[in-house]
Length: 477
Image (tube, rainbow, N blue to C red):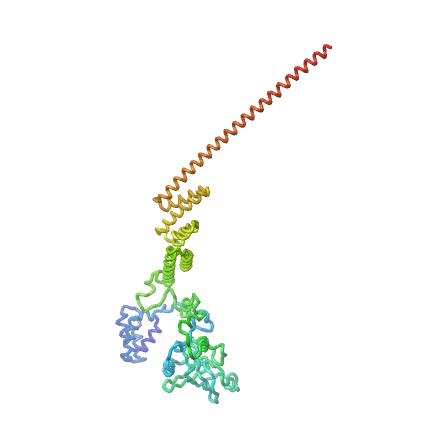
């Protein structure tokens, strides 16, 4: 537990809180080990407070282990500077400007909430030897208020104006009409008087980065500039102004603001013990919840698309299915519905692709499996007509692998195999006949060659005998 925070709390509420802490947190070793120190500190600083704080003391005692936990802020927070973050989240005008709040009430609430160290911005109205007066127009720190019409004046004494030279008059740097950023030094709520200072040491740690002194109009808070553009008579609603803000459209607004506030989205602090992060499961976190919300929204689009499909408005149905898948790319119902629409239009390959994706996400989805099997059989029939029998066989096999009892796929596969067998037998028969034709042709060619050879041999013999007879008769002569 954070002992410094505990000391501050007991020092403020007194021994009554310490007694409640002992009774409520009696098993907490931190409370028991430092009870004596806390008791001395509480008695030394302050007596028990009035009973009107008993409810607060009881809450602190019951939730002490959560309130003073060292991990309350799990991230390092930084101050929100709307000049740098105008595009990251919606910066709105003060809420009272959008409501009919009487000026007296505005003034009362202003002096009730303002504290020393708060930053104010105003215009110099008059300069005197003892200081200058400022008419406040806005607040520049944590508070956002519409105060320009209240005509609240603050004094900045000369001693609270930093000197820029040894012999120069510090008031010479200011003129009537200058915009001044200053820190509140004194607040007199009864007489409604304010004193401001330009010394940076008056600022609390979380506001120490602000520069005090003369500023330009560009240095005015964004909410004030938006306030000025609206005018005195606002005809727009809060929602309208919010949606017109550039930062409202930033999809990372929540993450950005959580980071600025030092709050972890994963280990979110809570005073409800049932909501402690250690008891959370993965589905309880924002990312999982957003995923469920997206799935729910996508299902609404699918339902609208189905209604369009039943009415014959296929284009509208396709638009709704595509919209659902833009919201949730893995939405099974949207994939199945779009696949069915593709199948109806004859785009069987696209339908099969959608059904496959649906089954990858949810392997047990009955309609996805049923429609995929039917579409595969239909696609197989198309491939048979295109004489792509092997691809058709693969479609039937895939359908049977998904559902072994799917009769249409089994019947189509058997017919295809018989057709393929007949095709093979036909090709074999054609091959044999072709071989026979080749053999007959070869034999015929051989016979022709033999005949030609015989003719050639017989002619030579006759010529030889004639030549011989001619030779003999020549010798006799």
